[in-house]
Image (cartoon, rainbow, N blue to C red):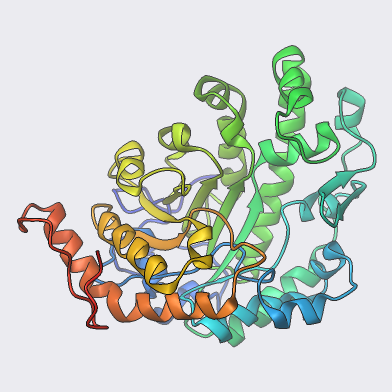
Length: 403
């Protein structure tokens, strides 16, 4: 697929910073064709045209910690909910209504494309994704089907874009390495021994497996964008277990293959991986606009590793939301200040919301960010440009000095 426009320092969806893309393969009525979504704080930050805005959303904001989510999902299988139009719509909207975040993230799961391809995969409570028939040879790879019916998901996306108005919807998929690992190991693994053994010992089988999974994920992303998603995130749970040489040789080309499926669609792309501090430079692909930074990395270090051509996302430790509010605010103020050195910064966690997080703590922090973020951003930018002396912290709108 060919690109609609070149990067020119503005991301793969092109155009000058702050403008609606000048060339677009998006369907009529797509949210990014409207000025409200195209000029939203999140989309502008992804483009590198941030100004003083501080957009914020949280990974795993849809579900987990919300009492209304727990009540709705009680007793129902997770993957069934991920194909149910009404469930997807309601669960995706819940954190937007409650917290006032600047983006919605589609309620789904990284193994949804596998289920849609008729792979025998379930999500076991307390365990995670488990496959009925692990894939460990060429025959197993050949048995993986094509991406099947996702019409319920697409219908939910279309409905969501109507409810969200000017708030962008982020679609997402798992990265090929993570899905391949679940297929090879048969479930979650800390060391991924069988996965690495295939990668090193059966490189041809590994390449076919990764190509197959990448095409499933890429087609799934494409369907989400055409249905109305205004940005996408590729989420790699397990890439942090790899060395940089192994990542660059055996994994990165297949993540690029995922993104090639939406190369003609001018939407921002976010790339995030858990424990990937040593891989950030390699993850900053030309086809990516935003690189997410894990909470284990100081954001300023992450920005240096990623480079000036990408925006960043992150990276509060999710555990900070379990600490007193002033602790979470102080840590967030530090992150916002450091994020000012990037071409654009989307505030998020450095992983997902923890299940035991008090939903009110999230609401409180989002409100605090919206109130105090612009002043912190301006101060951070002045510091990054060398216009501020000393170590005094800015005084946010709340009147309390943030250390």
